[in-house]
Length: 134
Image (cartoon, rainbow, N blue to C red):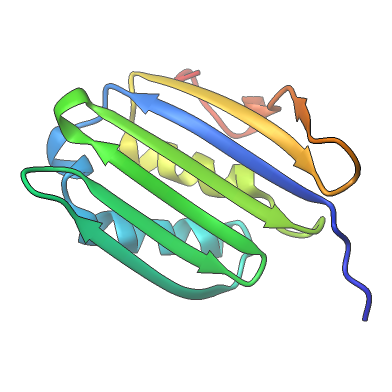
């Protein structure tokens, strides 16, 4: 079997998110696994870390690559990214699910195409995924 090197990498900064949600590593981990499954990815493992006095990091290892979030509850900020290899798994679906969960007042996505030459930043076609948040 031959695998494509093509991949999409979505990075998003989300602002104006509820402190308690950003500070709950366990809840975030559960939602991140759901996000991965919704986009068609295969979850291999996940782990989360709650920081003292606040904040969390969650990493979901995918057969297709990864999904992660790093939070700063005191600033209402979350940094998310989802990288998936191949054409079948859509990382924008995972990011949209997390936007629906986080309900930020502002969100700033970037989409990169990777694995087919120089990394290319492409305009995110978030209209079909994101409501009025962006």
